[in-house]
Length: 222
Ligand code: 5RP
Image (cartoon, rainbow, N blue to C red; front, side):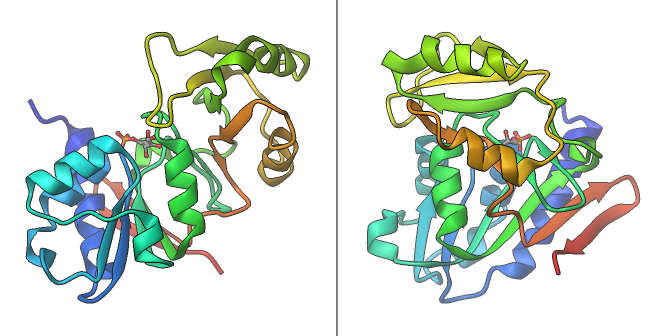
């Protein structure tokens, strides 16, 4: 049964359609909000220069709807990337990776001229960190990386029985104090064994489309 949150996710996803133009190279994110976008994108089939998926799940859904999906290498730089988030703040910093696709998502966000983030209002926070921070790690480094997070007063939890599309593992780090997201992202990027941190602060969203009870609010980063 569709919930209110589902309906808000769908509204946010549909609001992103106006950013997609024929001839664009488009990156498509991962998750339930993005799935609503994919399901509403039929009119662009055959009209886009390239479509690149941020996960195998997204690729399968796009192909099932008749889209040709190419690798980033073939597409070159992207005009637009549309993706959801687990948390977003007023600086357009995000926490992502609840679905475990953070590495490819971060690559596509970096490769895109514009990053439009689609969320429902439950994702809006004053301070990031209530949602456990997903971190993709090389399997042999998992315990060592986990100990580094304990030193930072986080509580890492191994996402058991989950392997990323890149063959790696995920630690979900609870209770981190994320007061300075760009600084923490840069710092964590220095830890050997970490492939990707689910903090999207050094490459934040450019536009956030947030669905609320009375419609979709558009916010543009200056
Ligand atoms: C997947 C993600 C998703 O964008 C995030 O988890 C939000 O998902 P949903 O739209 O299902 O709430 O980062 O890795």
